[in-house]
Image 1: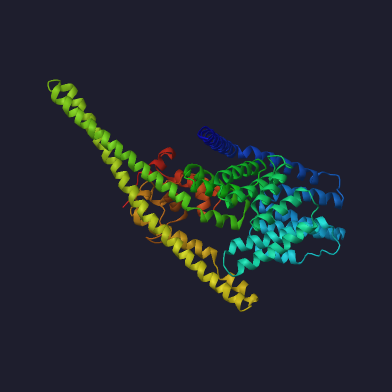
Image 2: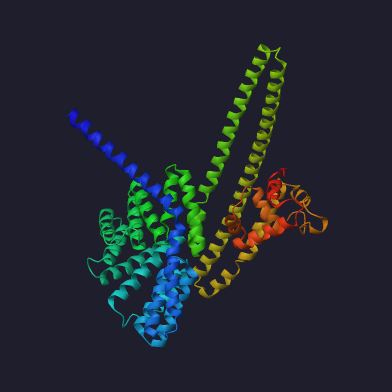
Amino acid sequence: MKLFSLLLLLLLYSGTALCITDTDSLLNELSHTIENKEVYSSRKEDRIKNLKQRLNRQEKLSLPEQFEVYNKLYEEYKSFKFDSAFMYAQKLQGIAGQLNDTTRATYAKIKLSFILLSSGMFKETLDSLNSVELAHVPDSTKADYYALKARAYYDLANYNMDNYYAQRYITSGNRYLDSAIALASPNTPQFYSLSGFRNLKAENFDEAAHDFRQVLQTYPPSSHDYAIAAASLGNVYKATGNIEQAIYWMAKASVADIKSSTNEAVALMSLAELLYKQGDENRAYTYIKQALKDATFYGARQRKIQVAAILPIIEGERLTTVESQRRRLFLYAAAVTLLTGLVVLFAIIIFRQLKRLKMAKRAITEANNDLHELNDHLVEANKIKEEYIGYSFNVYSEYIGKLEKFKRSIDKKLMARKYDDIPHVLKLVNLKKERALLYQSFDKVFLKLFPDFVSEFNAYFHEEDKIIPKDHESLTIELRIFALIRMGIHEHEQIATILEYSVNTIYTYKTRVKNRSILPNEEFEKKIMAIKAF
């Protein structure tokens, strides 16, 4: 019995180690795939280009042929870029109207509804779906319709996350999902996918896992359909507490999404969250950053909100980096102190060797200067960290307060059944004003940390080229760009995302400012980074 127990433990340990090794290898593959993302995007762009060329050829395509090409373009764009997919969904509706084909019209409206839902436009999605006529369409189209409507209610419940309305939405989603399953052909990928989703909602996890594995056997590992099934299987394992398997299948889904040039997917975001909880902060930071880029490129509103909810991962990573630098500085200080003692000891021993003594003293002086400079950087970094942590919490608190006030206002309108007043409430949200307040708050905190930034910045320009802000608590666009650079944000893409400008615009502003400076272009940013805080 003892021997049997020992063998069993060895087998279990070997199986666990093998699973961990496979997952780590898969995560390395995912990181490599992200590095080559542009290769896969380029292939998709080539397919899109060929389809557009077919539309632009001299020979006139018939309306059904145009419908077919527009549908292919829609399929290429639907999980790649929202605005283009939306445009081709509208073109499908237009062609269906010209053909007076109710089946195609219903098909086109379902496609439009799908892209609206993918971008987080819940009201518009339900309005579009509620206008669909199902009287004369095949069962397969009806199944697609009910499945999409179920997903709309499930997503709406996840978005609201309240105890009152969310349960209603889930109940409606279950009802429509049951209708879709009843209409789907048995033993097909669509049937198993719908059945797996229903079992997952009902917490029948074994049956759900079986269904999604049936779907995975159908599609190639680089397709978006495979990614959906793999992510769903990952959610099953996440719900049962098997985090290692959840990470494995979310990674498989993420690889498939990138290879199929899918920017709307949530697998990478979910994977980052799981890895963060497991303590793998470096990979989590890389993946959440890529998820944010994808959501921004695609134009998915709710995905940006979901990524923002995981932004503490980024902040935590930055804090970890600062703490790591502080520990390194402490080690440097200890090493310098030890070196100083050794130099003094050697100076006493070789007192008569004046030349070596002078060289040792010079080395000690340089080391001490480096130590003071490093300590100054550390004090500055800690001060900036403290100020911006307080600033971040204040901003988050203000926005949470505004969101709570906005939610209460909407709830009141809904409870009072004043549905027509809701658009008026929505109009009260002035995003342009909120963004201006955010920039104003950033300017104030930055100038508090760097009170001499504007004057030292203008010292590098002739009098007629100096940039003068409108008041002492604000920055111009040019100053704000270089303020972000002073804070350590150097990538054009990241600055463009923060300031809501294109990358070309940021590059133009930087180049224009550098060209007016009295400094060489290659020295300008070094001088900006040398501006001291407080």
